[in-house]
Image 1 (spheres, one colour):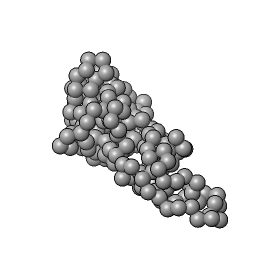
Image 2 (cartoon, rainbow, N blue to C red; image 1 turned 135 degrees about the horizontal axis):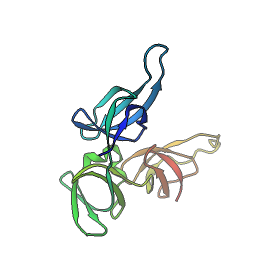
Image 3 (tube, rainbow, N blue to C red; image 1 turned 60 degrees about the vertical axis):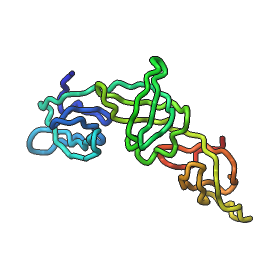
Image 4 (cartoon, rainbow, N blue to C red; image 1 turned 120 degrees about the horizontal axis):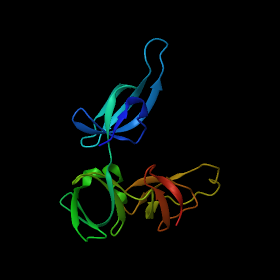
Length: 187
């Protein structure tokens, strides 16, 4: 695996550090008036979610890890496990539903997700940024309440609560941003 200098760490890099796999979340390059420059890096453990703040001097060497990404199709869920199928080999993989975290309700049957692997171990699951959902219930529009930036609460067919514009009604399909948990546009 390639070793990189401490000053070459960028957000999104995956590093092998302290016996674990860590993703660089934030990187701040600091040049103090006295002493050598260093990178203040906020790391997140890919296995258990712990966070760590670490300083790397430019002469420090760290292992940069490359993760394999595979597009796999979601088939079904059973007993807290998500079952995905490789589109090329038709091999099925069972993963913990916790890998998706709070984005789990947006995973739909047949959806293609990108799974990152370190060797044989699945570390993360990325679903599409925009997903089409149906509005299960919302309040009716009140006349005169069409001021700019006014939103009303709605519950989607997957149980997630979001804020939507007043012109969108019950039973309509909308596109939701799965990273920000907000209304994007009508479907």
